[in-house]
Amino acid sequence: MSMRDVIVATIGRAHGLRGEVALQLRTDQPEERLRRGASFTVMVDGQQRTLTVARTRLQQDRWYVAFDEVTDRTDAESLRGVDLVIEVDEAEEAAEDPDAWYPSQLKGLPVRHIEDDRELGVIVDVEHYPAQDLLVVRAATGRRVQLPLVTQLVPEVDLEEGVVRADPPGGLLEELPEDEQGPEPETSQPSRKR
Image (cartoon, rainbow, N blue to C red; front, side):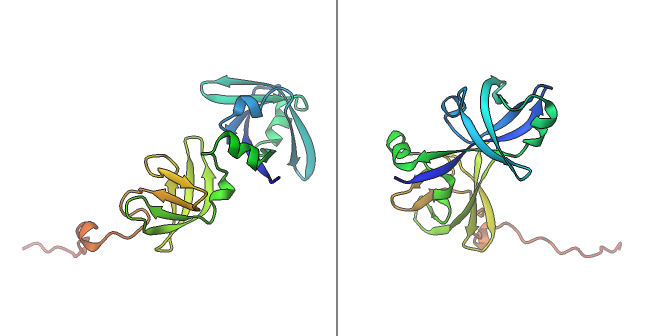
């Protein structure tokens, strides 16, 4: 049985005076992972703490949570940036959703073009943002490039084959041929009045 740590959410700013905090979700199952009574062990200022979900609410597409152990704004502010992590059984998760993957499973995978299978780079990280996740790719050119992890640009993640197939806009992960790069910039020379 292979267990993996999974970040459910990252705690954001305090909300109100009674210890409620905003969350940046990292799961597509918030109702299950953040149910009342769910417990998380976290490190805050070098101290281990347990946080137990007292209640959650959704307001304007934003999740908020109150913990039994946090009762004021000062304590809530001290939690900002803390990840809420659970341990999951990979085999059980894969059986439930065969198309699911974890960021750590993507690191090191090659990114290939969906049309001609040429290698575009290698995934070095996955960054999480409220709007979408970004793949950080070390392109064949050596540059680090952020590729939005959306179906239009990344139509296939194949963990069995160990490859991610992408259809990035031209020039994002590779140098454009000279004829596609546009005109050469004009060199700036002082003009003379005649």
